[in-house]
Length: 90
Image (cartoon, rainbow, N blue to C red; front, top):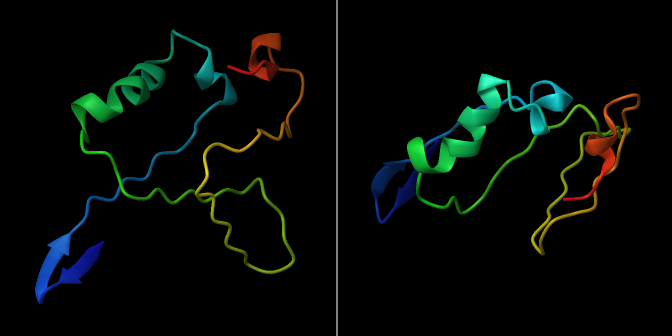
């Protein structure tokens, strides 16, 4: 992504990260879990000013944008028959 400030173009890092299997959140044997846990320290240490999340788990009649700026939202569980730990709040 490119942004222009004071006539100078600045390139911002852009990452695509798929959420992978739902059990990625609890399965310590998955290498992707360890990568995501260390992502900030190993790949991108500055705290981002914004994060864009695109989800196929949100249905609307028309393309829609939602902004969350006041902290985390409650999780809506739209899946079933996974290990009990996946349904517990952290």
